[in-house]
Length: 456
Ligand SMILES: Cc1ncc(COP(=O)(O)O)c(C=O)c1O
Image (cartoon, rainbow, N blue to C red; front, side, top):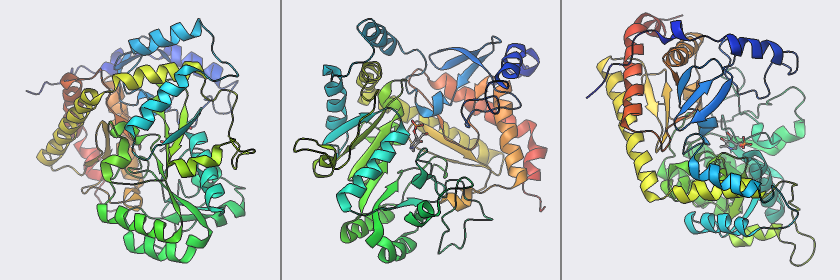
């Protein structure tokens, strides 16, 4: 049974006076009024007061169903009770020590037990740091400096993985020879030279590029389903070729699962048959507190070991393995049992199927990608196969913005141009709310949508 969403235009009831005042003040203390580039501001950011389960409440008292979940971190939603209680308890016993704790062994054990190819772990504070140290580990293990990454894929803020993160049709170069595109003016030429840009799911090109460059490449960094590059699944034959080529040429595979670990109890590499040497994790394993982790094969992880003197890679960090993040992570991961993943899988399948049906019924120029608890809506008739297929023109960008704005007006936060996610406090009601709203959007905005397909 589908329900019509409350078609009364929530926008008329939504007020943003407190957010407007906050943003005016914020402009005097932050370069553009925000402290993260990823903050949505349409036209101003909505300042949040609190979160509860699947919902967020802004400072003006508006309520939203949260499909962002702090960029896919909050797999149990907001203020998840076991996490809140664990953090309160730990806070009263001390927030950080220059000594190890029993808890860090417990969280590391959960990861080693669940995630194939994770024999050993090191904790850090962000996904960026995890990716950075995994790359340093691969360099130290192989003695090579270069890395390879996929065009359009996001891996955090370490320079080498930022290359071609935001490539465009104007600068990404020929299909059979992708250009290393700098993310910012002044990015060192040496970083661009040391970063080989690959194309996801392009097996022949991968063979050609690795044959030519493997002698200088320490690792291929691959997110099994890169969110910003389209949230597209890897082809099995492509992964098989990747394994063979990397093994043959002495190149390590780093699976960046900072976002996609949430795809299953054993993570995303296990789901798609990828066999990495190192895995980077973050987001869900900290239960909503800052965290990152590098895991991997014992032989490779030994680069971090100081057992016989100075380690090959010196990895520390004042707040690494801090007890607050660790206890929050244990509470979140313990609650993420196989039943929880089955629930998320079922909800995700239902939502993606609903959206695809609605698109077909309206013969609308949209497609849906994703897996598990993740989904992304594209303004194209067929699903993109890789990053270059996700490039949008101004009319498509305008429709995506309108879609996000429409959802927000109806009390749902739908990220624009990135993965949206479900969380364990959600159920069929939330899935149907999202589906019904999308149907209403197609009905109310058919003129805008049709304009996307008109020749410019
Ligand atoms: C795949 C991937 N890698 C790395 C990162 C960086 O993680 P963090 O923001 O914790 O530094 C992200 C963050 O969104 C990510 O999605």
